[in-house]
Length: 593
Image (spheres, rainbow, N blue to C red):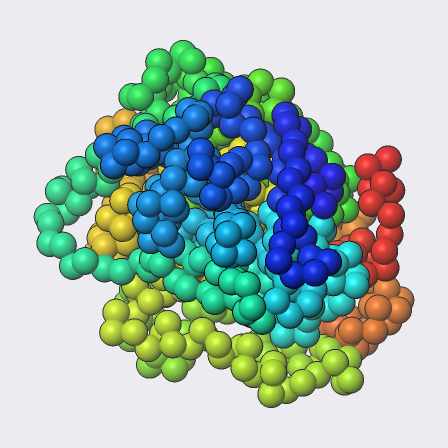
């Protein structure tokens, strides 16, 4: 199992196989390590000093020194300087509640031989993935990736509800994968399986909520700035150098500015990938790096490299995600790995500070719409995927389960019924879109290059403060992330602070070029009529008509429909490539040739 994840941990590996009380049954732990903290003493699987518990752990605990100090004051003994051992002792002293004291990104499994109990936990936002399966009742298999679990489940078979979810949202559900029998442990959850139990118990240990703190606009900006500084400082804990991926947008530049206050700016390597296009990110990133005195590390790559690495990206993603910048994430990780193996990133700010264009719909006049109309309008603008009635027409008739399709389409409606609609929308994206579209892409494609990506905006204390801030301070007029921009206005050049998310000079200016490769370029064979017919999931003629409507004058002028078809074309290409790799059992070696 661990051989399939060697890229996640090229520095070390370990395995333990233990007998159980059940005849013929064994308990095994395996680990691949990317050494970041306590390079010599952090070997895994790791046993507690008293040999009561064993652990395998992926991630980082940023407050491990503080937790270690509390545990030592209680009389706990330690054999290493690693954060891994802190998790073990926290579990030994506080049981399942120990996870609530950990600040960081993590996925871990603990085995207690005496009671034959498995305990699994995943961090609050789902920065680190954790998959589990039960090949037989009463058994448990878990891993940081899906591929090691598939042979145990008899191969890859599609879970129809998850397939529907992908085709409606562009990413999968948070509790299960597109592979039958393989589940996600959702963010902020633990899993416990005891001897004799047929199925595990899954418990939520944390949920984002508004505290209702009242501050002046200036005080909110000051508090956000101070909290970001503290979050970034905590995320620099490591026994190896830490870099930064820099797009030149306000999010990653804000992290850079905070980082420059925690360490010498001249020591910061800020990595940027460019494509040589008129609206390239490189000039903005260079401006931000030079402003704080950091070292700008740049690389120009050809635009068609997206198509060349498309199959490799899908192989590492493991589940279909219709995200146009997957190639950028993958290639940027390769650039980072040439100099460091840990990087800070700017993800999470859009969901906390309402940075996406569709958040404008939560301000007048759009917010005056009835909730029953506002919610589907927001989903349409946010994800640009077909409505449920349209998807039913595009699918092959024998693949349509209208009851299941409608259930998937409406499973998030409760978020729109919360008293505070903007908070409900933000919480929905933080709990579903963020882990399944953004964080899954980042973890899989950076770890493919043996790079650890850290997300300071998702520090718990910072996230709770940012979520609590009034929505009116986040979206002001036509400006998204207004509060964050105000908080860092005196730290960055105006061209960075005022840079939009979309538009000619926005951070998403590359998207039309990428989508063009799918509709008319080197990836178009993946959505061609014969390909769709052979796969058998879609009505090929209906799909071609739908995509062909992109050229109609009415569709071209529509703010959503003009982009929906291009996004669906990308989703189809990703799905077909995924199916070829995982369902048709194409040898993995072919995509590395």
